[in-house]
Image 1 (cartoon, rainbow, N blue to C red):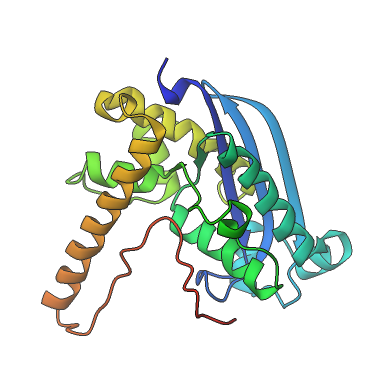
Image 2: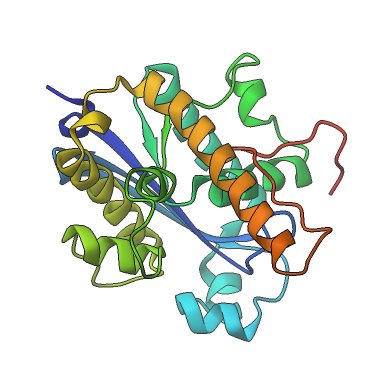
Length: 240
């Protein structure tokens, strides 16, 4: 049985912004999915400790008043999310996140912000793995398909339902189902063991970043730099 029909852990964050180095967690969801069906679910609401910008509220619907009244302290939410993800990685279960470099970098930044052990610390110095990122995989296996590559668009391409986009639980479930759907369409992806698929995604992401950087420079931005690191950007010397 391929990895896509076994236990997968859908993971998603909704946040205060789009820069993973600056944004804070507002909601987080972790969903256990087996062969496309949810079998376990946890969700957190955080008080991010900063004002949630109106544009972010418009995306995910979580107001400042609700976050302050109902949310747990941000450090507790980041710590709980890190612990549960690490528990799966330690047993070899893949964590699925759409655009994983955003969510994992943001979570890592929150841990550092609150002086909590990093994901690597919790894993005894190992990198978080295996991670499955449908965004990175789809961009490699169907490189020349036209159209958007956001979660809604790619779910539509693969026939995966997404009824409540930008809800952490809905997006986490959709990401896991999308990973399964991509593997069903592309047998070469399904045939890879999770550890090997993780390694391939590192390569695929770096190839995309190089190509995109070259494109930007050809279009008149000679100083453009696209970070090629996947799935986690965690400079040891960075302070937040």
